[in-house]
Length: 79
Image (cartoon, rainbow, N blue to C red; front, side):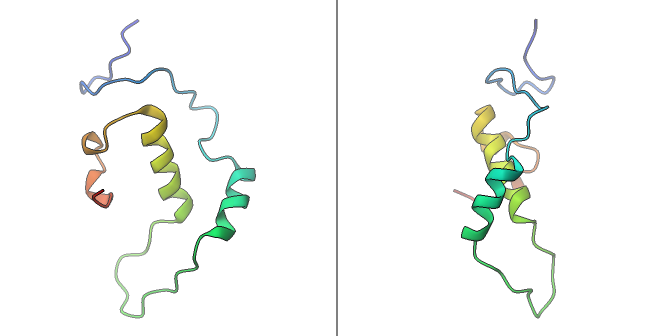
């Protein structure tokens, strides 16, 4: 079968999307290690939740997709 995505990006292999990349039990162990960030008094764009950010990082690592080919690359800080 053709495993190349339609937009031509490389493919690292099958990814079982039925399993969460960041299970709840792992998140409950990681969350206390993260610093608490107070809301910005000046307002601005709300922060992306830490769990969402970590899940995105795990997706990039698990799929071996180059970070610069992601459609959401502007939301990712430069390495």
